[in-house]
Amino acid sequence: MWGRGSKTFRSQFKGHGYDVEMLDVCVVVLCGVPGSGKSTFANYLIKNQKGDNCDGQGVQKRRDDASSIHWLLVSYDDIIPSDVERNIIEREVPNAWKSHREKVQNAVESLIQTLKPSSEMTEPITNDNSDCHSKSFGEFLWEMRGREDGSVVIVIDDNMYYTSMRYKFYQLTRKYRVGYCQVHTECDTDVSLVRNRQRTSRQVPDDIILNMAARFEAPNPEHNSWEKYSITVNTTVSPEVLEDSVMQTMEVISRALSDPSKPITDDVDQTSREVDRKICSENIIHQADILMRKLIAEYMSQASKQSTDKSHMKALSASLGLCKSDILQNMKKGELYFGSPEELASKLRDVFQEKMAEGSYG
Image 1: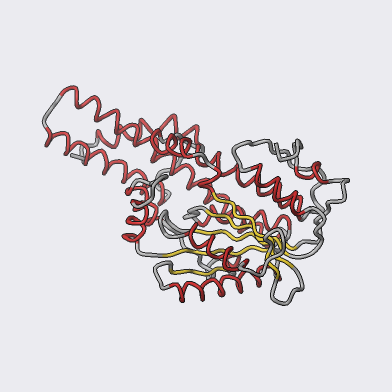
Image 2: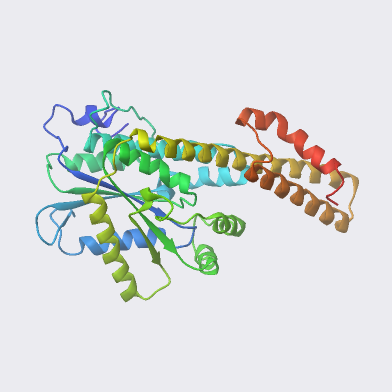
């Protein structure tokens, strides 16, 4: 339920004098590996901007008093329960992350549709996901009732290590013609590992952080014009430098607010199709990785029943790992192609077994 007993944001407020259509909206996507300081910087940014210059509801007044900034932090760590996250990581459930991410994106879209309804949308988006922070979203909109000016800044706090992940939110801002920008929190991987180990909860396995850091795709405004409003923040600096980063980030947000994303037109359709193809390819490669991990576990389990020789088991594990890496590399190069998740599921085991049978892995 989206708060106050309503199934949709729009039906909750329509007809009750709570129009918020004059508000400017900006989506700020944070990206960085676990332990890079995303959540810390997001909270520091919001707290620093609110400061003591707030109204009665904690909404910061701009220094020129022309309007107000209303902040909403959307933290994936808060939205996805820790037991669900642990289950996804331990069992490596295919498409689980994708499913939860889509729920969050749908929730954010419902929020934006209420704040900035598109002329192209005729029906509200129904979203009854109880695990998508819907209560805080509903409460935020309830506090926004009657406000007809100012800006809403929605901060998305997640790893977003692939360009395609961030592009989904850009597509959303283009659909509703609202602002979009990115903040890349950066630090040495060793620092991220240490920070992660110091967490009292929701620690991420080291290998996941290392793998994510190796595959991380930082914002590239020169290559992707839609990433033009991006800033990289080094989170290992002194508080004074970090304060400068906050000011610079606010400048980027301000520019994004004054230059909303343009609606979809024919000249960008080709770019959209290319990104969509990339998203599909990345999803299938990720699923292939998960499926082969399970295959390797099966191989090792069967082998352990036949041999207790540690050196043999170690060599087998290394060979299986090399086979998996080669298959993933071939997929990335386009030398090995699966047209759909269904085709992947039905053929990957045979491909893996054929590779191992070639005799070049051990």
